[in-house]
Image (cartoon, rainbow, N blue to C red; front, side, top):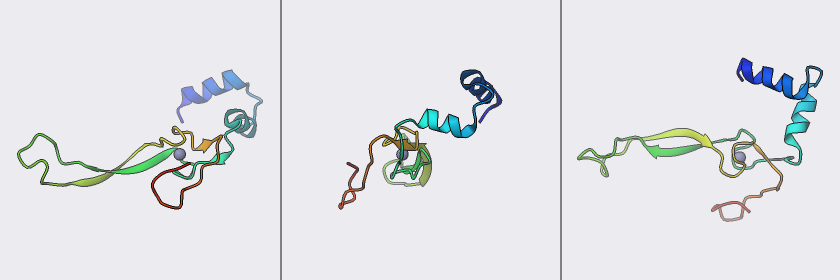
Length: 93
Ligand SMILES: [Zn+2]
């Protein structure tokens, strides 16, 4: 968290607002921890880091992981809807 973000929070919510008040205010109805990212707002995806466009592309693989914003909770970490994994691991409902 950056200094200017904290200052903006104080301006928006007042200096006497506790972090607990702030969390409740922002969280609102989003009371369910996102099962996909486990509340972090980020998920790790595997991708082929080998540059495309080279003669070897398509044959050479350089698998790496990177964090992207969780698409189930839109990076919030919590959702209004309680998602449960389906029995078959192909998505969320
Ligand atoms: Zn999520």
